[in-house]
Length: 386
Image 1 (cartoon, rainbow, N blue to C red):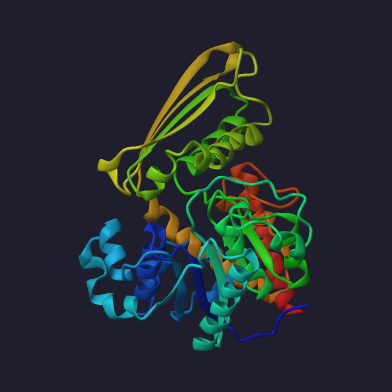
Image 2: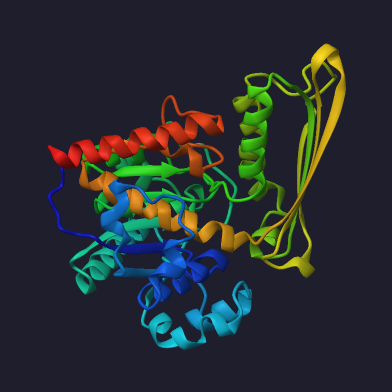
């Protein structure tokens, strides 16, 4: 059933609002009010289905542990020069940012705080469609596949539940769609069950922004030409808080799996199966001088006609948060539109945006993922016409 709400304003609720991507997103949302074209021209999707959510009226709120103001956090991350946001200071400081729940509180108390905060955010902006965006850092994962009820989840110790899950569950129980842009797994049974009950969509996991996006495109092209990939070496250096956090092997484990699994999924075979071990290597290194301006190196060894070997080398000098922020805006628009047509549970059709898409039968190649977006647009438009 279509949710007949006239809510074309988006209220983006950000977990980790004062991080590098969160503050870049805040600057974008503030800019939309004065110069919407500056932001909209960088969005991937300009479809009829999402046109209602191209209005200049965007809002943002969220949570963070940091005591810094939003403008202080923007200055600290250095993603954007001060000239790009100084005139927006009043707008930025009017964004409501609540303190993150204390992680030593019982899980239920943490979830209830998120739900109270969401209710308050909605009270400030009752005509907006809220969407939760998870931008929390990568963390060590606990297997919660056996947790099938809220009672079971609430009985766990706080350290057994990742902070992400608290925000996601609070959002889902409040009927708020979820964008999981982090590598942390939140699509556990209890969350999926709640999403179906609350008629709420969830998409994720791990935003596909730079190196991995180009890997998907190149791997899809090599597959289309029947060029056998024998090895792929990827190095990613970045100097922001994300890079520092990923130096902890437990925190990096999920992201590395997402990055490595993707290639075999696209190609349909295990790269390096003819050798003693896998020859798809992915390394992430923290290199402070780069800040948010990351650099990625890829060396691809492949063979063509009559087994003749060739090599392709790629160097990306990108900006992490600048690549990520427009994808987050796009995803928020998709999720708002899907909520309005009554979609619930995992949304595999949005695999284009993620390293590790969630949901059954999601597609892997670039061509298939673009086609999935086109079909999703038709579904939204078709439902809205009924």
